[in-house]
Structures are given as C-alpha cells and as structure tokens.
Image (tube, rainbow, N blue to C red; front, top):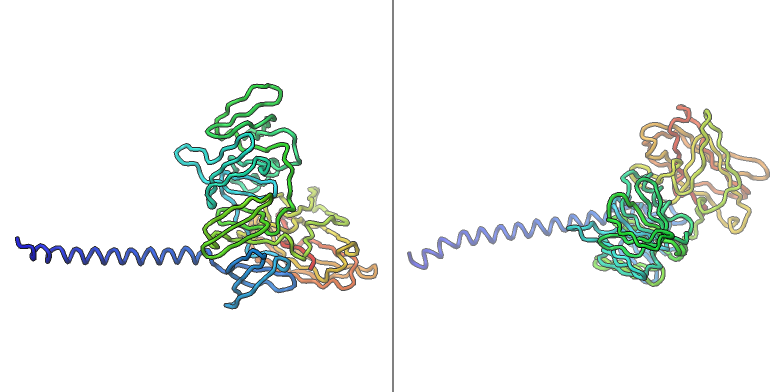
Length: 425
C-alpha cells in the first residue's frame, strides 16, 4: 500500500477526532459558564433605609466597600449601610471548626482514612473544603464538630453545647450524651486525651461515638469582625476585611488569621456587623408575656425559631430575628440611649418552615405614644408556607414598641412565628 493511500485513509479519522475534541471543548466551556453563572444569581440585598432589591455581588475592596449590580446598574454599598445580601447556606458538613471569633470553617471530607485535622500542643492544621490547607494557633480554636447530626435542631443544640460558657477543661462530647473532661493532647489518626485526674493519656479512635470536642481555656471574641462571609460549602467566617473579585478571595479574620480562596463564586452570603441598624434580638426587652391557648408555655427566642432551631422560611435560613408563639407580646423601650435616634421599625414576618402547612397567626405592631397604645400594623392571617410580608413602621414620638403574635383561626397549632431581620433604623 502506498504512503498516499494510507494518508487518505487516516485523514477522515483525524478530522473526526478533531471535530470531537472541538465539540468536547465547547461543552466544557458551556458547562463552566453554567457553573459560574449558578453562583452569580441575583439575591436579596437589604440596606439601611432602602427597600429590598435583587442584586449580584461584583467585588469587595480592602476599604470595606462592596460593589453590587442592581437592575443592570452598579451600586457601591458601605458596610455601615449594608444589612445583608442573600441568606447563608445551611451547612450539611459532618465536620467543622468553630473559632473564637464565631467563625465556622467546614472541613474537607476525609479520604482513604486520612485525617483532615491535626491538633498538637500549640498548633492546628486542617484541610478545609474550599480554602485548602490552613494552620493557626490552638488558642484561636474554640470547638471541633466531628460528627454533626443531620437534624438542623439537633445540630444547633450540639453547637450550643460545644460553645457554652468558657470552661477551664477540654470536653469530649459523646453521641450518648456523656461528657469526658480533661485535656486534649493531640488529634491525628486518633485522639489522645488525658481524662481529668488520671495522669495517663487515652488513645481514642475517630469513631462515631465522639461527636465533638470543646476546648477549655480559650476566650471567645465575638465582636472582632466587621462582616460575616458565607461560603457555598456552609462556612460562615467573621472577617475584619474581605477582598473578592472574579479570581481572588482573601479574608482576614480575628487575630491576623488570613484565608484565601478561588474567587467570588464561592461567596453566597454577606452580613454587616457594623451596620447602623439595631437588631431587636441584640437588645434586652422591657417585658414579655405569653398567654397559652391551653397550658403549654412558650418562650421568645433570639436569632432562633420558637423551637430553638434556625429561623427558616421557604428553605432559607435567617441569622437575625425573633421566634415567638401565639399569643405573645414582646415590648421594648425606645427612650433609652441610643434608641432615641432611630426613626422606624422594619421586619419581615412569616411562619417558620417547621410549621409545614399548618399554623395561623396575625402579626401586629403597637406603638405607645402619650401613655396610649396604638396599633401601627396588622398583617392578614398568615399560614405556614405563605411568603414573608414586609413591615415598615414609622416610630414618630413613640416611647415603646410592642410586637404581638396573635391567634388566628386554627387555635395555636404550630404557630411558630418569625420576625425576620427585626430591627430599628
């Protein structure tokens, strides 16, 4: 066979191969665009003194200014004016670290039995899901969630147990509910723990029996940051500064701890800590009263639904707000400093997702002016599954404000009422 004939037979196959490669490259490029666009979706943007708007995050600078795209227009927002952009993603990760500034850092999944966390006498080294390898001083670590429950309420309760008031000793939290106190010496392929008073380290496997470790002797510092940054893996980071662009992500946490990632596509949520608004959940109420429908008493919850779980409506979780049950009344004094300077009350109201399709309440707002209570807002009957309703009430010369969650037409069955982002502006 001649060389020319061989070439003529090979060329069609070569052309077919080139065509396949081109089609594959186009498909990969299209898929990449789809992935990038998926994380650039328009999300609710809440600013002080403005109506909510849909926006996408464009970038963030070292000066703290944030650039959003609103209705195809670029809008610069300072952290003092920002309330939040989007809502945080619920973490589904089995393991995460809780830092002393309140940051939650999701760990990567272990592979081939290798540990993604190493803790020694003074240092911590971890493999995170989005931000790669990180290392920092042990004194910056408050707790380790090793085996998170799948139920959101149980997860919240375990995290509250792990981050309870400062303890001198370390604590191992077991799945049975038992607690072992002592000193965590090392974590690697196993856990080396010296139980109190024994003087002999125990070598414990990284099994399902140990769900978390609370580190004693560390001082929480919840007011260290300026902005909370939520990532798509469920991490929530309390940052002093955020620099984010298409291909860069740099965060500085409390204590000069710096983290870096791939870019804006990993950021799905922002909340300003230095906003000029004042959340009611951060204030002490003047009075609270609950009138049981039968005999079950319900307490008011801060930044939680009335059951103690996350504030959740239509699949979104809200970090700030109040959880109440019918029929209840929560009162705040407006004459104390610095509340006199605020001009209006703003919130969204809805029944929590835990109500499912049940529950029926009426939300009311009362203002006290010249020793007389006046109704300033009354919602329609709201049921589980209804979308949130926006409230904006001008305070005028009011000396007190009362939030009332009232019975509707179904008694008090699953009346898990949420006042989302309840605040003074």
